[in-house]
Amino acid sequence: MRMMLKAAMCTEKANAAVRDGTLGKTIQGILEQIKPEAAYFSDADGKRTAYLICNITEAAQIPALAEPWFLALNAAVEMHAVMVPEDLAKAGPALDQAGKKYPR
Figure 1 (cartoon, rainbow, N blue to C red):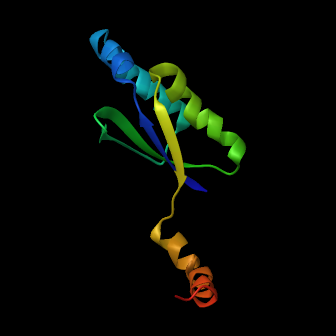
Figure 2: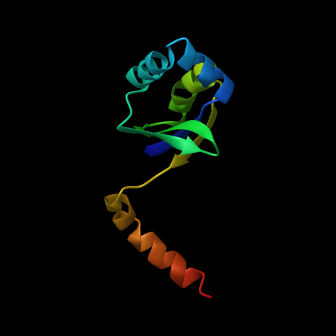
């Protein structure tokens, strides 16, 4: 299952890492460990934020994705199941069925 992980880094912790030159190395280490399908970096609510797309086969893999962000950067982490267009197409029959079962 594809998951989108959003890690909003603690500003104080990330600022300290920028100042001592370790932020890039820390993030690179996390990415090498997690091996996301894709990684994007932006801001969210005024915080440095990473958005990662990761594939997992079971829920027991979630801590391995989240803990590095918690421990290294005191990040607030959210995870959401996500779909690519092919997944959404496969969901079409279930959507149609729900639409018929729960009309307006």
